[in-house]
Length: 190
Image (cartoon, rainbow, N blue to C red; front, side):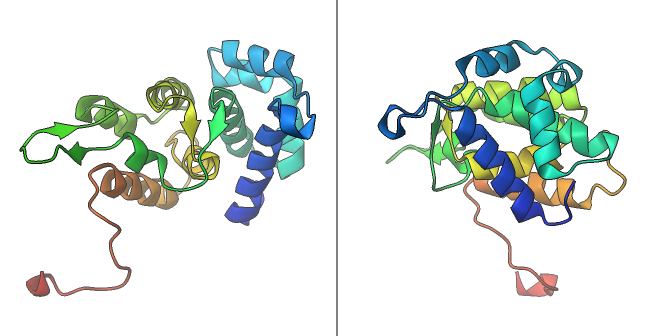
């Protein structure tokens, strides 16, 4: 994959937008490609699709892990129907406290979110993220989801530092805990 994560995310989002029908822009999209990718039950199946291979070439992926991550993104993103441009996906499906009560509510219940956190293989991620997109009403921040999909799987990762960082970021957002400051902090100042 390209070394610049932001550039890769932009290319994937552009690929996704190109597949989507948009009557306002008179863009027919590619409904057949969307349907074929939606039916894929594994990342390997998604790799067989010409649209996935076009995405792999667009992003300049050469390694097996990079191609598999892009296939994962392709197979999940085709389930997104509309784009939210603001906010994180984890915050969208995360916990919110009901007014004047101690009860909490979430589109994605904590147990299901925990299963998402534990997803490590490409196919586990495929199933978990597809469920998450469905729970979010198929309308999510595509760039945020893409960034997570490209870093999330533990399978094939030489250094899982980026994956751990994105998973922690999602946990904070899910529980509405904000984002931690970077840099060293003295624990006694907490």
